Image 1 (cartoon, rainbow, N blue to C red):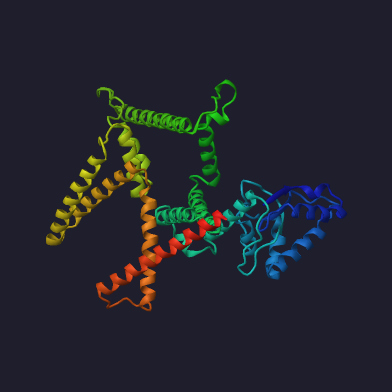
Image 2: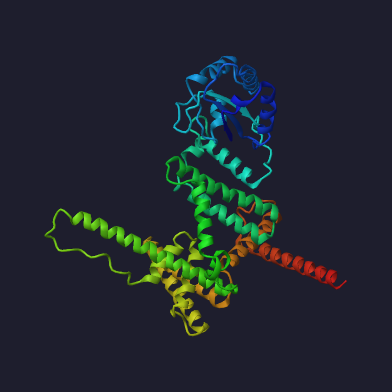
Length: 440
């Protein structure tokens, strides 16, 4: 939204329409141009503009009675100046109480390229315009006056599964090297960021600007080799040194936050103890006896379990908690497998699956250590297995006409092996064709 104050006071009537057109050209699609006047002195030609505004309102579907009410209300009421909701509030003829932002006596609104019949607005020319457009759409979805019931029901907690799902879909698109799919999935993930910011802004806790400003400040703070000035700027380091510097600065920030939290706790204790001065003095909480564990607990809190296991495994190994060789890792794998077998047998006998679930987790964690020792990515490995399974399974389904119910495991296994052989043969042919093409 572009908001201008008192621009009509200084213009001759012939200059008003060209200015309106010029300002209107600066408004992003779906945005609004708001012109206001605090007074209407003698001699000011307001009527032509008022008639133009009224005609525009009618062309957008506002009934005549509402148009008359809107135009007459300019001396008694004002519209909300929230740029994300200004357009839809006007079109639904919703007048707001005067705001502290602007006690203007006269408002005229020019709508620019408003989407109609559910069609998406034209893509803005700038990144900032596109982000503003997305914020406007999300704000409208969350608008209690005519928004989407499903979106209005959502909370930070209810959206957690969607955040994780969209992040995994982004990773899947990256693995498949599909730019169109990646752009779409990044958009879905961006929606989650904007939606969480919108929910928080409605409760005046933080907004999208705070989110963006926070990560910008963090990037600048943690890249002194890029953003520091003068003598404070270190020489251009290699990638490993940059990573080490990042972790060091991050650790320093965490220590400062911990110190601030300790000071706050000490202040709270002092305030609590103030009425009873005779009570022995209390001391601030002692430093953590397990700083690495505390840092890791915070780091993996938001990670999927498999990624968190790899993070813990790497950090613990770097601290010295490590096997001497690969043989020790395999010994641990077999030990955990035997314990899992025993726990599963117990669960089948008693119906209590808690112990079996713990032992399954131990097996998976140990296999993550195998992956770390081999320098392979367990997440990518499991994702590849999922893809291969579905490829083979789809061939088994097609071979049976889409119906696998009632088939014997022997028949299904035979078709499974045929599918594996066919996929392997196709891969070999593709590799041969690629090699011949490269050779020519």
